[in-house]
Each structure stands twice: as structure tokens, then as C-alpha cells.
Length: 233
Image (cartoon, rainbow, N blue to C red; front, side, top):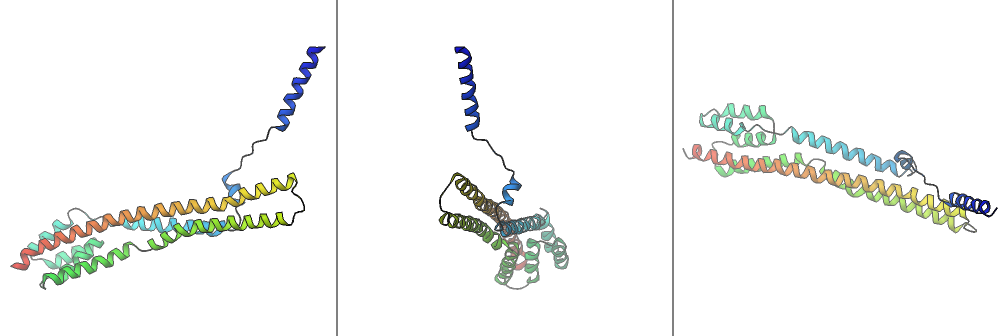
């Protein structure tokens, strides 16, 4: 009889623990996003805009690769006195480096300083084209987290407003507040995620553009060295 009572007591304790043990709940990313509120709409639009700028600039930069034989071809045309062929080759190549060298070829016969200034000015124009929309990318990196924080703060304000007009905080109300808090944090997380992606993409594109600019500077120096002998003769 005593053993039976002990077994019943152990079974009762186990059942009580099972009842009191909190149930784990899982939520999908889509469900979490759907609860983030309307503030996620501008954050989503900013993310689409940032991705469009990133891939558009990336494809543009990748198309700017110039064959290593470019300057060799220009050198051969200049040494042979075939300037028109050199200009045509630059137009055919259609890259920032080629357009910059073409500006220099168009100034042949003029003082070396004027040729150098023409190349430098053409280089500035090409750099401006390369950096198109990068300022917008930088703005998105800072603006998306702000939208996220705004959505969270508006949600928290609403929660505390409801608390102020609640007579007493029962268990159900506390659960509602907890749920409201984690839902409103979704907008902050989304804004930070978009901001991190835009920030990383911005600096990656800047790195790629700096490599192109460095290549332009090296090519300009090679071209000016190439002109020294013809100009002196």
C-alpha cells in the first residue's frame, strides 16, 4: 500500500512539472516579418533599391576590364604615326581608360601640359560616372536602421499607451505586452540587416572603383611617358 502511494505521488509530481513547464514556440521568418507592421514596407523598398544599385554598378565595373594589350596597341599606332587608328581603337574599346587616352590623342601636337590636363579632366569625368548612385547607397545604409528604430519606438509608445489605460495588469495583459515588444523589435532587426548589407555593398563597390581609378592613373602615366619622345622630335 505504501509503495502504491509513493508511485501515485511521483506520477502526480511528474504531471505537475509537465503542466508548469513552459511550451517552446517557434516562428518562421515570414510570420515574423508579417508582424513587423507597415514600417517594413519602406525598409523593404530600400533593400530592393540598394540591391539594384549594387548589381547595376557591379556589372558596369566588370565591363570596364581592358585588355593588357591595350597600351601596346596604342604605343604601336603612335610610334607608326597612325593617330587616327589609335583614336578608332580607343572608341572601339569603350572604357574609361580608353576614353581618357582618346582625349590625350586628340590634343597631340599641343603642349604636354595641355595634353596632361585634358587626360586629367577626362579622368575626373569618368570617376564621376563610376561613382554614380553610390551616395544613394550610403544614404540607404544609414536610413534603413532609422526606419527600423522608428517602427520599434512607435510600437513601444502604443504598448505603454495601452498600459496607461489598463486598470490592472493581469497575466493576459503581461503576455500581450511581451508579444507586442518582440513584434516591434522586428522592424529594428530588419532595418539593421538592410543597413549592414547596404554598408558592406557600398564599401565593396568603393574598393572596386579604387582599383579602376588606380589602373587609370597608371595608364595615364604610361601614355605621358609614351608621348615624351614623339613630342620632343
